[in-house]
Image (cartoon, rainbow, N blue to C red; front, top):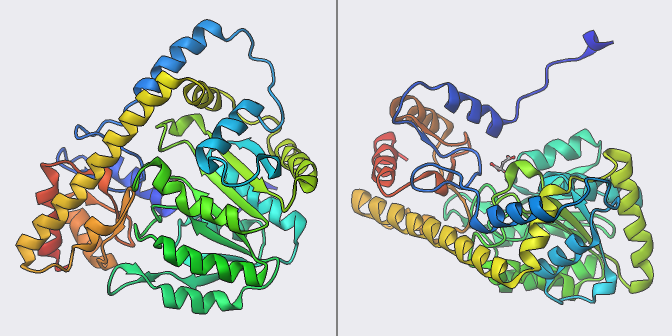
Length: 394
Ligand code: LMR
């Protein structure tokens, strides 16, 4: 049986991680996978997480199963962090998932169960694992224009023109903030136009919220999601705690599914529990428990927010520095978009050959579509990147 298997195409982000590891150069620079790093290249355990872990070690008395949808306290804490009352709580179903990817996968399975013919609409480009999972599930999918290669901003007219093809019951995958891979986000006014269109068509948004707190701030980054849930009858949200709590390997995510009325919530909640049971039974608990402890404790929340804000401001500072270095070196403002982009990533618009050249010549690793992880830089490596970009003719 196993001899029937064919080699699977490797995920390009994970492949790059491997190449970086194998590169013996000591001055290599990793701008690949979306993992936050300090100026010393360390991905730290956040202070509040460490404190919560110590507390948990003291108080945790059992490792028995939680609920199929995870601990309800985690569901409420995450619901409040993301939605903060933007929609009636009794319309919200919640299930803990293994990371944000788990939430995406469960959301797609939920869509397929409810609407087997639904087309899933994806931004061009999007996180490569989105189309990969959708293809694996055998669901119809379609792309909508998103990134304007000339301005490196959002091609909003193109996006709205393509979304004219959306039908009732289709799902439209949107990045709640910090678009991955481009770094280009919609303005709140553009979100309003988009929401009005989705309302008219009866399509359901699936919001991928993996970077809340990495863009303009915790509340600001949730603003679009809150606008969507307060305007539309049904919304799905797949959120991750990997980045904003820095607990990547704990696989901590959540799927929120908002029904049109409180009457529909119990069946939706039951279906989320059912889907968890089919795929992995109980979701992992450790990361979810730490997040709940932090969000339920004022002091821990304050400490977490302070550290998250430091991380966010650090990334913004690196964006400013890179844009300014490039302004000086090119005597133009054509790279100012880097300072306007938000989150960990910017797509800088280099060709695959230029990306390869920078990797081979300068040991600078970015994804082949020229997505770079801003957090992989520090004050000393920003000029090296700027120099390499100019030398490569970007
Ligand atoms: C990324 O986009 O680099 C991250 O979300 C990590 C991943 O799993 O691809």
